[in-house]
Image (cartoon, rainbow, N blue to C red; front, side, top):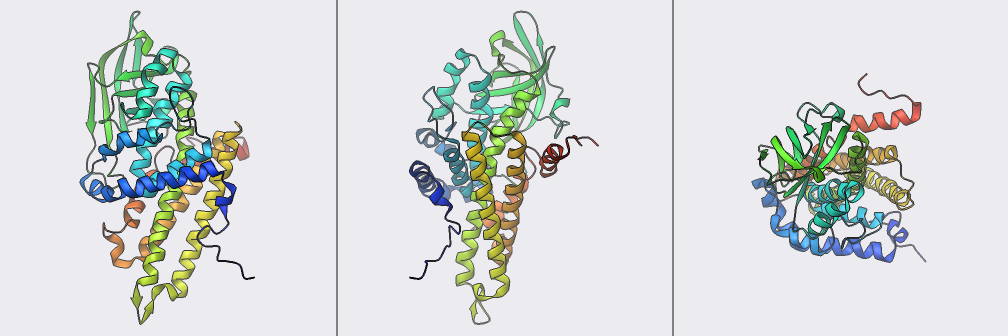
Length: 390
């Protein structure tokens, strides 16, 4: 009996998922398709985030979805990865919002915070009642976060926070910021309500990428923080980098959604677009491009799945996450570029997805560790020698 075609799940990866994981993937895809896809083109063009969907993200358990307790869903890490995949299938800005909220705000409070901080913030952040942002990067920091100038001074009965941060996702939407600052005991994390006197958020405009995401500069001018604003279990830059590892894991899954969205669009297009009397999908050049794109996405999915297995087992190393982030972002970006090319002139129009995803992925290629930085992280594991700064 002849076998059915293996396309689109070419290696039957869905058979490796649990029923619950497949249900998560399907339900998030349905929500995004129905409630967010109709909005995202205009949001991108108008440089705004669709804030009206935030309560629904909370209701569906898509904020901090792999965290336990405090009314949070406690999904396994593969299900969480599939959430990121389906959000980014719509737009990288949507995944960035959820990724920052869960991995960069809720995770550090969950991992390094006091019980009072957890009780105050985690339920509100998980429901979407409160929005958070993560203040690590500075204008002159970039790939060297240890060079940060923001400082929190211990004044006995309070902390005094001064400095600034840049490229902060959700900054102008947030009610709370997790801010990393130099102290006399090294770099520590602080929970900073954005209504604190001396706190200013300035929206960054004119972006050519991630336009449906709010990006901000943060300024701290003699902000008086109570002593219990400190994340008590934060200890040096390694705590901040642990948060980035959580977010980078989500990115390794998320970008596959963007790549798949471009691929699906291109497949449908080349079947219908007729030139020289036949659909362009009949040509060798187009079929070669499609085959290469499907191979890259399939390889990326297998890599992400293995990372999820290791993470579920508590055995995931940050360098393995770097491999996943670097490989999958590069793969998704290559796929988006190729798909945009297959769409021809139509590919530059907002009615199509591929160029929007392509532009977004140029940012994802750079943020939360540039492509080259992640290669150096893996290289350091191979050689036992760090090459940063050389």
